[in-house]
Image (cartoon, rainbow, N blue to C red):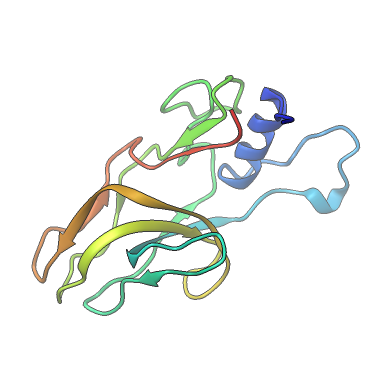
Length: 156
């Protein structure tokens, strides 16, 4: 099975998460930079590649907006790097905590997350299951992904 080179993995991560131009020889101007923002969502029934799952609703829930930038997502060479990717891991993670609003109603058992290209509706880009399910009830502390806890890997 073919695999992506570290060069391409770095370029894709920097383009999608980190707001950088694709920077590949022969790339058209239309390739430009990736999304301006990423929007992290929580799910009570996990998504799949073809289905959206069940996103949390109500009780002050909202997706968290993260600007696509070198500062907000790590480079592939270091867990908290803020320079262009140059590593061999094909992996990025959040450089800051991703904190949702504090719940004002029961959200239920959160089982997964997804990254979208819009604050509401939009296109789901990436999804995954949580390592451990989390029950979120009214007046609980605001749910959060700690620094480096939300990790994405391309290829490798």
